[in-house]
Amino acid sequence: MKRQTLLVDADDTLWENNLFFEQAIAEFIARTERLGYSAAYVRRILNEIEKRNIRQHGYGVGSFRRSLEETYRRLAGELAHGDEWAWIRARAREIEHTPPRILAGVPETLAFLARRHRLILFTKGEPAEQGAKIERSGLISYFEAVEITAEKDAASYERVVSRHKIVKRNAWMVGNSPKSDVNPALEAGLNVVFIPHRLTWELEHAELLGGAGRLLLLISFGELRQHF
Image (cartoon, rainbow, N blue to C red; front, side, top):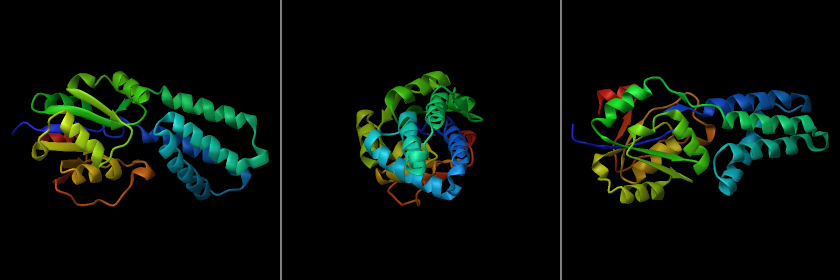
């Protein structure tokens, strides 16, 4: 196969990420039961607040902690308790320092691909936080470059294409998020490998759109070896 450029997502493509946030959210909802709100209502309020905080503060554990705090403040009002603030801060620190849990088949697949193609890690989030996860993952040696962006939209893909002199017809974005990995990459004219994750964050869901590139749907990361 002709040498390709593979832009590879990190969170929930190479390692588990949203799993830890979902566990914390489930615990948070359970702790707010005494306030009398349904789980669905609490999650809706949290999602609304997260959307706003992402626009103002970006992605990452810090923004997540802020969103939990604001949600609790809105729900509890004068009933807010100091123990809950302490729990939120402690739970956020725990997530931040959780070592990456590499998904099945990832290291051997990256080793196979790196011998045949150019790999660029392309992820979004808070730079220091994402950089630390990448270093702890032990996977950085497989990549020619690492790109961390505040948001993955068509413009950010165009910047990466320009910076690394990528030929679009020979380039693929590999990821799990319709909103960040699939739609904007197709819009920018890249090809896409979509590998859905069972716990993709609700705010990353989107209807798959068309584009200039081709779309390949796989079940697991290891399947890349059959196509590249």
